[in-house]
Picture (cartoon, one colour):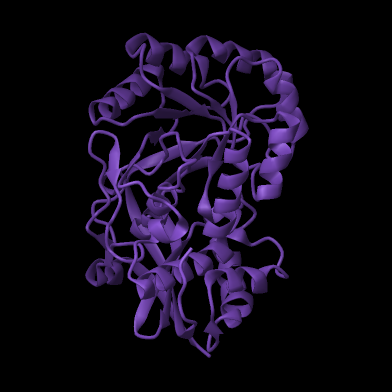
Length: 374
């Protein structure tokens, strides 16, 4: 935490941004080739703080979407800080408690405030959150490939780039055959899978068969609201279960751990409502001896920098999803670009998120802009 004077938020700029991906990314939810997102800039005392809203176009990963997050931001969340002297990001969290859900929209504001206050204090965001690492271990998340052979070639490329963990997206019918091919080609890599809630308990035999592939964990196999089912499944698996969509708060994390529904937790800043709740989940998991890691939502540079910052905390003991920006985009909106070397991502040393906005690139990829004042 940082001790800083209150800051008056003079204005907010909300941009809609579209950035083409280098490839089409397929999960059990669907396929995307363009990253569309909201980028929030808060201006206060001559500084700008930046937050990225990771809500997607459709309500598949989360009930929130681009079209719902935007009016929630402009009508309910930003009025809590615009024209006000805000004493801390925690003050915004308290004010926003009466607004239920809408965690991705809340996270955009909270992240922008965290960036602002860290910049005002002249310290890196990770340090202001309580982190200490100078580099973080990163893995890579690979979408569902058409065939096992394609999967192996995709894995081969990323193993050669030095990533510390390979995660394969799976769904019924595209699981054991891919894993068998990958394990045969790469018997010693750290390998995980992510089902994005594509299975049911009726398919428990299919999931138990994946134990044979020595996975580090199996991520979110069942419905995101059913922790009891995950606890039942966990009793029958050798592979640890990691929860993602199910964990929206520290209360969810504590319940899942107590039920035995998971032994690993994926922390996503947007999914849980900001750094504050991410830290509370981190602390609860660490107290219970449960490792956490930082998940990704195909973030551009601002969101990626926030992910790097939170992953500097000590409980983030498994490689996260924050792979190199150049894997996804021809050019990013920040400089320097966040690039991993041999599976290690350097933590920016500058104040706040530690990267500068490339206004030329941002101008080219912005499709709409709205400035709000008190």
